Amino acid sequence: MNYKEQLLFLIKNALEEDIGDGDHSTLSCIETNAKGKAILKIKEEGILAGVEVAATIFKYAEPGVIFSPVKKDGDKMMVGEIAFEVEAKVHTILSCERLVLNCMQRMSGIATLTNKYVQKLKGYNTKLLDTRKTTPNFRLLEKEAVRIGGGTNHRFGLYDMIMLKDNHIDYSGGIENAIEKANEYLQEKNLALKIEIETRSIEDVKTVLKVGKVNRIMLDNFTPQQITEAVKLINGKYETEASGGINLENIQEYAATGVDHISSGAIIHQAKSIDLSLKAQLL
Image 1 (cartoon, helix red, strand yellow):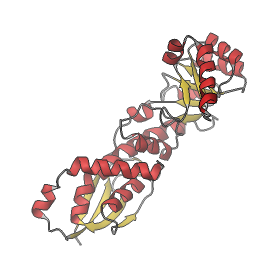
Image 2: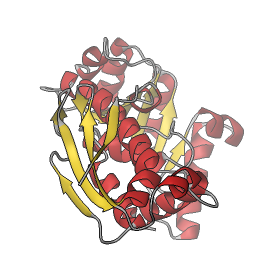
Image 3: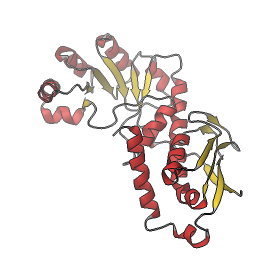
Image 4: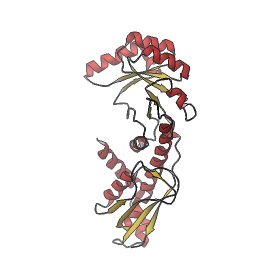
């Protein structure tokens, strides 16, 4: 499925989870055809994300809604600003309200934290990557939020890249075996996937360089000094990625090593949701 198809699938299941056999709160006191308007109010500073998702949610529930964005994804937002206005049946607005807010608050929090990391990397050639440390069934929008915040998406799942991590290496009998078997597998299955391999020491890096047949070398839990040494050894033959223990306080020290990529699970799993609210406006 492409992004749009995945998003519609997510929306369908999320609304079914929330509404069940009916939004009885709304059904009990609002006429079926009553029309209404609502605005999305910003209550906290940050980077806005999820406006396009919100539009898709409302239009999925009611194709004829009038959705008027005031700000767009990636915009800086300030307390008191309005992100969008929506005109639709009141039933649509109330039934979609929580899903819209859950998505936008979470996405805006991730985009905001991601952007803080990205700002630290200005002036360096290092790109910030996300990871698979995501919320089950919400990865699509968490990774979209990273992109909106200025980061770069790493592999989406287990299917779109071969990443030989420590357990793969140990289970397969070492770096050489893991690389050889991965290459044989790709040839046998006629797959055009990139191969990344994790290294845990300078000796591991030297072993990978002897074997070759990979696209990227991950330098996991290396100090900046060790990464500098590894990058020099690799000498541009393969892409490099630093991972493990990297945060806002030390990311510039890692970027200064010349490493191509820095991956961070924290930009998703440590992000704090941004405070937003959907407020009714009478027509």
